[in-house]
Amino acid sequence: MELSVHRLRMLRELQRRGTITAAAAALHYTASAVSQQLAQLERDVGAKLFERLGRRVQLTELGMLLTEHAEEILGAVERATLALEEAQETQTVRLTAGVWASVASGLLPTALASLAEDHPGIEVRTRELAPEETADAVRDGSLDFSFVIDYTDAPTPWDNGLERVAVAVERLYAAVPAATATTSTISLSELGDQPWILASPRSHFGRAVRVACQRFGFEPMINHEVEEQATAMAMVSAGLGVTLVSDLGLTLRPSGVDILTLTTPVLRTVSVAHRRTTQRRPALRLVIDAVRAAAAELGLGASATVPG
Image (tube, rainbow, N blue to C red; front, side, top):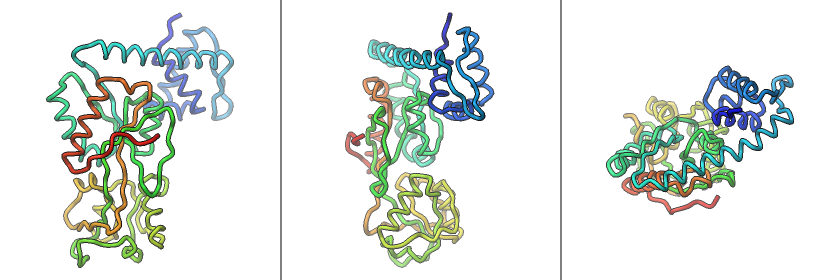
């Protein structure tokens, strides 16, 4: 019997998610591809590993047994990878990172350029995800690391199996239509009677801004609900309302938008999240160092760790 690590990872994700569709989404495959691979795993084992119960899937006793061993096998593969990297004098490693738009445009170009110059054997590939999805993808093993955010006004619940290393601290600024403000600073409370353009409360950003507004005594009147800072600023440019934007988001600012400093800062910490079992990976440490150096160049330096 030959067991595929790739298929074992799919089985583990099926056990965690409960449906093939959810497992496929987490692993960034189609449901059909995951279903085919799991069927092949059953043929490899020569036994039924799961059964359908309506829309959900339940593992059989043998399926649960194999999943338990899958955790050990996948952990051993990760430890072997680490041992090989530590034994190599020259790092030749490929890492996959979860990013979102403002990090990809404002922080990564400088960091990856520096990394390529100093450590050409380390290749970082990126996958754009919503900030709320990146930590789960790291935990599940489909990403080596990801960027995550934590707001002073709305701390994010944390998975104890993951480690966070703070790489930047951003301020949020008010973005208003050009020529509508009389000063370069503003209190958040002064925006209470303005129409807002804001992400949904399902997102960390949208939830944190709502909490900050409530702290200043008002509920934002949201006329347009959009998820990306670049989209929100484009609508601000058209005079459709106001929004908040982060330091890294400023790289996406279009013409027709004025940026005002908030008199009482609203902050967020950008961190790199990785599995605790990979914290000794030399390549990962070098990538984090490059990202932190790039953030420091932008004036966004952060402390070394975030309690998790």
